[in-house]
Length: 222
Length: 312
Ligand code: SF4
Ligand code: SF4
Image 1 (cartoon, rainbow over the protein chains, first blue to last red):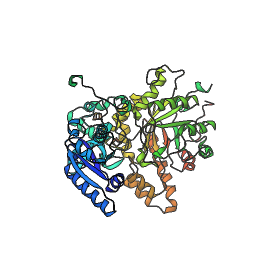
Image 2: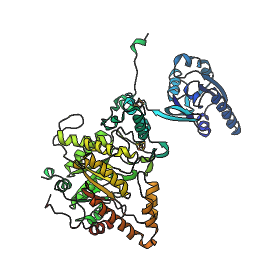
Image 3: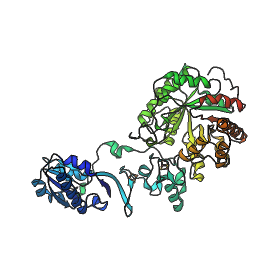
Image 4: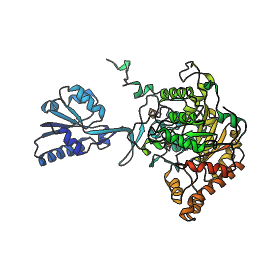
């Protein structure tokens, strides 16, 4: 899923300051799972905005709504009326959701309430870890299903670097060294020979280096 | 004329000499006198001098420019190049440029992560890794082509170096990685500073058993310690560094004013032991911010005078 974190209220407060009627728009999918922008967070944030505005002598009307997904038209439509009633939208979706909303409601200022951070997993309660950078050319099969592009701080395809010690990454002792994990996995799988193979430079053209990407599925076009 | 010359370091190693290299960092600014001063301290003391590339991710004069300043006073530079800051386009271009200016040796590194440096808010590149870089430089030399297969109008023919850290984990993998670097293109290897001779001996033995010491020139790194504090710092704070407790104790066991002397003594003992090991082709002295000590170490180790190859 996409993992994000709600922006600090101080920043949000500044962003919404010019507006009188604000729709706080939650998203019920990824950002809900990571407690950044689901129904509950939307409600709490809406109250917080009302509260700080009142405290600072500003009047702002805050409405709240959560749709299932802000990255799909079908669900975005459900927000149309509420968006129409307000003069601005604070979207708690990931960056894609924010842009999708802005594209549908071109005359409305749409503001980001969440810092979108990464594609990751819920490792355990309260801990999300980054796992994939969406490079567009998945090479996990080579690396025992541990992604060096994302999880090695230096994106080494022929790691580990000289700073890997006791299983930890030199860049952050709280982070496991991806290459240590790769080696352990390959050991379990009996594929240690993968390590002897030279991995050539990656083709980044399928990543954001190639410009914004698009996926066309002819078979689904109607 | 200059472009026809080949690496003096390569000549010496091929001739079977026990070589001495050292390291110097360019200044944090454009003052070329700084680098020339450092170079002069090492003239006739070392066979080649590594020039770091924004080491520890602190912005400094470029390694190419600093290498040229050294070349101009007759020293042979080993230009270090990291993949942290340049993508493959910039790397290849700079290598061609460096070669056109007379630089003949390159040490291919991935580089310290910028979060350790003076500008942690920088974006890193890491388009390719050090292994890919070594391969690229070798391919340019052997095939005369760039990475895209384009025929070059005079290919850079660099003598290719890479780094190895026998002290990092996982240990079993360290020799495989060395083999991989040699396959990729490394002609010579400079290692992380050796304090743990036990572990180094084990590593070089494994390398020997795999036949690697016949395929590459290995120059173990040494760094003289200045104080017990430095020993501790290196052990605890520098990634991939292994300073055994006994060494730290030895540094702590002498009065402060004698600590530097003790550090040099340890360094000389280390060099002596390393020279006894089979498969070692030289020594790489990294006297961090202490370049003036290098001449004394080389002399103390009985490695002076340096061999004269005539004008190279
Ligand atoms: S290789 Fe690419 S697609 Fe696969 S996990 Fe890593 S970043 Fe994601
Ligand atoms: S310590 Fe491991 S994860 Fe960290 S940069 Fe080095 S190889 Fe990558």
